[in-house]
Amino acid sequence: MLRFKETAFALALVAFVAGAGVAQGQDRSAEADKLYERLEADFRVDMEKAMEAEQAKVEAWQAAAKKAKAEGKPPPPMPAMRMAPPEDLMTKHLGFYEKAAAQFAGTDEAIRFLQMFIMLGSMTKEKERIGAACKTLTTTHLKSAQLADAIQAISMASMLIGDEESEKFLRAVETGSPHADIRASAILIRATDKLENAPVKSAEYAAAKKEALRAAEIAEAPAIKQEVQSIIDGREKVVGGKVAPDIVGVDLDGVAFKLSDYKGKIIMLDFWGNW
Image (tube, rainbow, N blue to C red; front, top):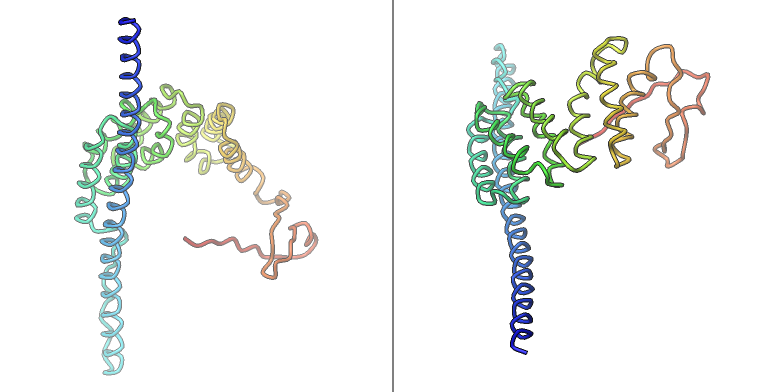
């Protein structure tokens, strides 16, 4: 009877510890969610301030140009406008995401902070820190399913760490991830530039196409397969001298139409979007 009680107690203790682990994990996840939302909001506020400062420069120049015109004077030169966020702003927020990644180091929660760290850092001069973050993603977090959202950031990092280094990290994901779609995405990301830009009859394009089709074969998600086919069709079918794909859509009056409805007529296609 004593042995039975001891066994029952041990099992109860294991169950308690396991339950506590789940609760602790949920608490950590909630904590990470809250921190990520706060960092996003802070970054958005600073970005808006930077944009407002640029807009103020434009408005000041417009006012000066208007005054000069009224006085019969030549307008002042238009001020140079920033095409990217101020580097000090990026560096400031880079530190916040780096600190957050360290706070959740070794857990899946760190991945999103590393992702943002790499994306922001790619627009700075912090080559070593960004390379180290890519290495952490592709070693510590290599087996995680959460890596799916972060591998695009590794591709972006090529602007800073170089194509060769970025490709090395993507190949590590391709060979080491247990998740088919993540492996397929890593292959497709590597192939996309040449698939979209190399001449269709070139050896570079042929090699990239072969890799993209391999990604489609590995992938389980229909979206990846569709993306591969869409890129290839865009390069090989939407070219001068070939029949355009039969685009289907809805016009401004809500009436469904097909491109083939206008066969034999001269039309202008205007593809647009907003973000």
